[in-house]
Length: 278
Image (cartoon, rainbow, N blue to C red):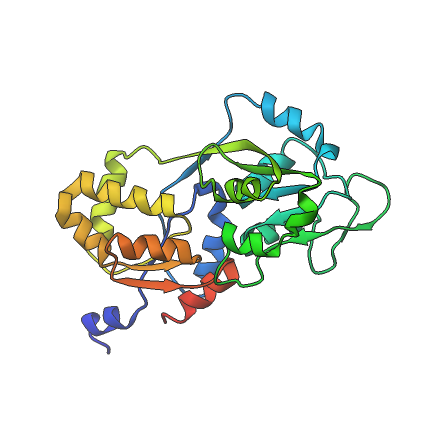
């Protein structure tokens, strides 16, 4: 019989899933199906807006725009909770594979690029997205856009209440008329006593942390500092991170993390990265 210590050391690390609760269930099931232990530990919450008047006003006039850009899957879901469809002639831009998968939930797919939109007939829809799954952010999306043609149109960016300004700033610097509207807000969860205890337990063992935003990483560091000062921060920095974007990996490196795997954008790449840890 295998000694208990030997058996424990041969098992893969548990996976700490830091996504918001509403977005974690399906992915947690896929991770569990691969034979990994999943520990939900959300580091972000997604909330609705206090006032939707501005967003609804813009969505009622989508024909004014030549492109709608979604900064995240949350932005896509927020818009489709307010309207049933997009005008078929309106091109769409997204940042990564997760957003492409979310568009597909609403019948918008880049492979076929055909959807019914708000009309009765099927039409080809133009979808812009970074082609390199290892670098999916504002910079690489800008490389895909036809900037000269956008100068003759207006661009609508759907985002959270906070976030990077780079996409809007770069477009405006090149003479594009940009409207940027919030559709949701992000917030750190309340750091309850239960969460403090769970964090302390997680830091006493080795785990694979799936971190899909820099904001979530900042929350983890803040919580570690609040709970146990530099000792807990150091323990957190020695946990293994799996991140989907170069920008998150760069943030983690600057924050002192020692072990980081860059998976590439989308759940499939995250699952492959987890399998490589077996």
